[in-house]
Image (cartoon, rainbow, N blue to C red; front, side):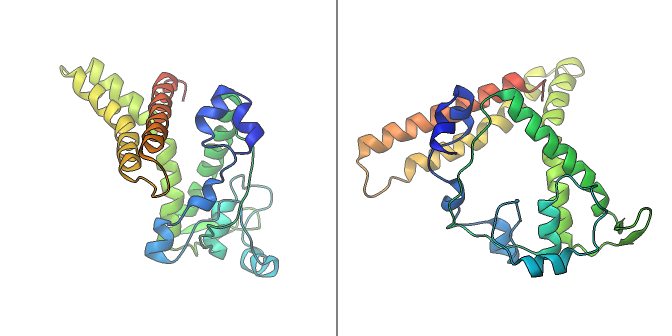
Length: 227
């Protein structure tokens, strides 16, 4: 996030990470790149225009695809680029962030047809053989799975509270899903002390980052019904 964006609101400060530091430049590994020699196009990158056009010409129905970047990367292929800096503003308010994610999720579900053997073509009503690999289809499916996580957590709570005698078990499961990832990240952060940083500075930064992560978990839990 850009420096002005990081200080414009508490929400941007909470979710925007460290202002002035581009998270893309910190990415030293990507599981798809490492295991399958293929990254994911996320709408930001450097590409050869002619090759891009050649790979995508005549592939999609016009003006019918909202989340185009991942699908374009599935057709044209993409690789991880970790040393290019890009700054952008993070949404300053929860409502703006929710509206943005709503558009993303809506676009992801529009791509559900590309999980089938035949996909929409450039002509209305005409369907073509799906050329996507199993890995590309998994990427599309994984976005759909991710969009259903809030619904699944709420259902787990409701069923646990109304249909079972062990309501604490479902509550503990939901809390574990939300708390375990930041707890593990905080532990690793604490153990990985930079060589050029004093111990006191490292502990202070680690504690501050840990507090911010768990504050985000509390906010996610509070907004879970709305999500």
